[in-house]
Image (cartoon, rainbow, N blue to C red; front, side, top):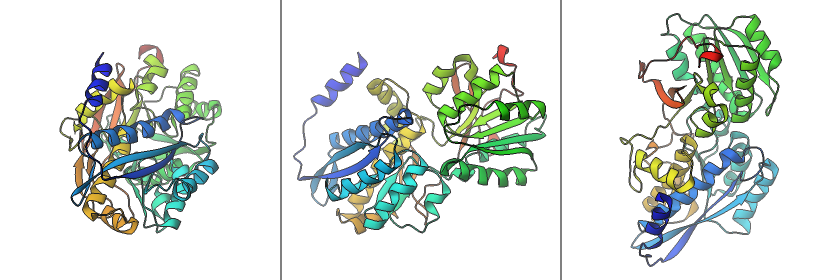
Length: 395
């Protein structure tokens, strides 16, 4: 009923008299293995464009411009994604580029933006590699992968008893390799002993060998850098093999409702991190605040937004701010304006460093009784961590 009322409310808003339109193009995973996360970006781009258009669109000088979107399905195929970004610019004539999901895709696709000098703002890739190439036309709304476990490791040093040994597992893709590289340094600096440091194949489904090593080594804490399907497989097999470390934390999946629904009670105790929670303190020009945004999102799409959704909306908002500041759709002027954007949003404060990446702190979270609970941020515990973890049959 609420979704119907929401639709009606938008349908009867007076249509502004548009001078012309600004088209944002993206190639997103709408089908294939990572479509479940790719859908966040399509939904985020559409929701943001609709809201901003309803509020009058983009002001360039004294005229109003409608945001139009051209979104293609890359079928979770990175080669197709690259071809589609070429198509978006050469055939579809979009003005600017929004990003896909996942660092591997962003690494390849952003080269098209850099080569053509048409700016891309992407909220789907966090790998440090994206920003280490000296590119000047790529901007990102996810914080650095190398610090994803930063808040978790800081919290681990304050636990009693403190974990004595750590296993670090990571997939062999650009995002997870960056996470592992940064995590190694963070663990070393924290004085935590890494006893297992292993890379596994992306989309791996069998973790039994690694889990047996964790069990036989009586490892206290397990940190896994992987994507959602891998993490779900890892947890299911950990339970079946009776592997229950004192703490286990995962880079992706934990904040999402899909993760909790897929695992049921077995999600309880899983830790992770997020750069975004739907707080009413996060004010936004178009959505009011993050809590209101999350409520409207769920009413519209039937599922809860996580940080992927908020990062996608922030990418669109960054373009709107930059275009209005530049007073033009000239790619170079908008690129220069993007480098200077500084505004508050439902996602937090948006600005980019010299490499084009946002800087936002990660909040350690844990699933407790089926809910996402913020645990640690800013050098302090926000809520009590369930630690050491209870046996699987007690969660």
